[in-house]
Length: 298
Image 1 (cartoon, helix red, strand yellow):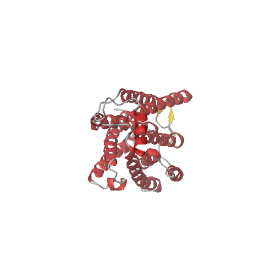
Image 2 (cartoon, helix red, strand yellow; image 1 turned 120 degrees about the horizontal axis):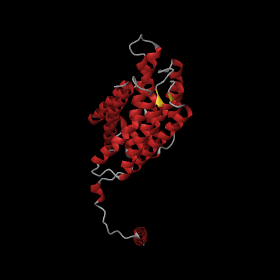
Image 3 (tube, rainbow, N blue to C red; image 1 turned 30 degrees about the vertical axis):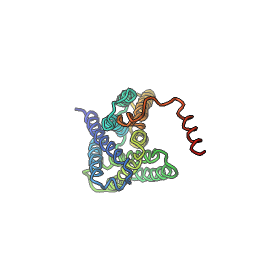
Image 4 (cartoon, rainbow, N blue to C red; image 1 turned 135 degrees about the horizontal axis):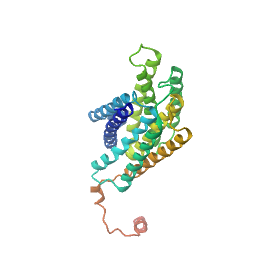
């Protein structure tokens, strides 16, 4: 098996672990418990183990493949989580969701064709680590300041934290086994707070539902990692400008798939609840409600 094949296989298994954790996180987030309280509970420990399993496989995968390819594989988390969540909600996977899976897989296949192995460097230097760290803190501060409708700001912040953590993980992995130096210790030390921040932010973002926050996280995460990979790690697209164009189109296709998956997941209603509504509701229900309100006030 080639290095890229091994990396893709590990990324798929990693996505399965992340998907299981995301579905559990979303279910327990609806109980109203705080993110920190959830993470220290027994079920929270399960999600932490699943996330840890996904993270460990992702770390190993980064030894074999480029960050700008492996990080977009994270959208498979949503591809797996949506039907898994549908199963728990006792409903069928909709045609929109199936179309979303198709678009996502086509987009990932397109990225696989054009993303090449890095030819210059595979790790950040100390100055770049510090630069990325400062930029990350500033961006997270901006995202977390102000109202957060639907948890989307927290989901975006979580995606950035995970994406940067992956870049730092790859940098630390490149120096693993060598002498202890700042080039290894600094990124390795920063991975821990970034991962914890990503977990807490993701958990709090799922309070309003799984679909939209998970989709935002899965779009922002690879985008942050791709920026680092393409501009700082020497990664590139095959075929020059043409390859770049194909890569952008493929990324847009994957994004469309994620959006399609999100629209249904964001409005999940268990089938057993849908049956509670009578089928013969009057068409002028809003008007009738208004008249009733007038009568009650009188």
